[in-house]
Length: 277
Image (cartoon, rainbow, N blue to C red; front, side, top):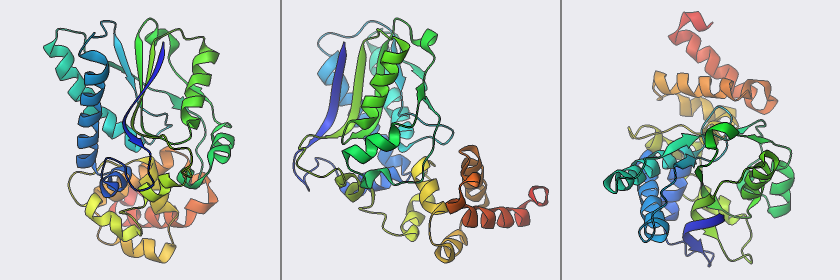
């Protein structure tokens, strides 16, 4: 069984069923919005697929694939799991387990501005991996924030075929582009709705409810160097350390486009911590 569930269906260019500003903040690490989105997705899934005839087999929740730095969906997933577990426990059903889809390639391109063919070409160079033995006989819930062209789902199902998985599978999305007459770049319209310069990140990072993700790390590292230096001035040491460590974990120090800003961070950290010099 392979079913797709999306909480919001996008049929018109500017009618989403959710706040574009909230979605933009979510994509850049606003954990409070992620909480709202995750809870809403869990409630919608419960009402659509669990209330009438609960799934009694072990559920495994799997966030969108990542290498070292989690995606924005990872934070949404955490709140989705919490909400779903409360419902499952209340109905004396097994709480969820979690698994990870590992990916091997990171890229600097902004995925949201690409069309369907370009997306599939870019992601087609990647490969996804999962612990086949751990998920055997379990119902898999693959989570992602938005389905635009289906390229990520294509790669997930390619992995399913390559591993010979016979699990029941749900593909869960907070939102899905239904109207194929709308260009896939609508994703970038949503991504950048509230974050149009690096300084728009301040209110998210300094809010006390921030969760770092791949998008914000790439955005900061690829930004104009002079503006980046100004941006970094009022940031807490913990944030700068985390930004640097996440970048290293994803191998961004080996990518030329990120090196000027990363080298500057390294110099800044040497002031905080002489051992890093």
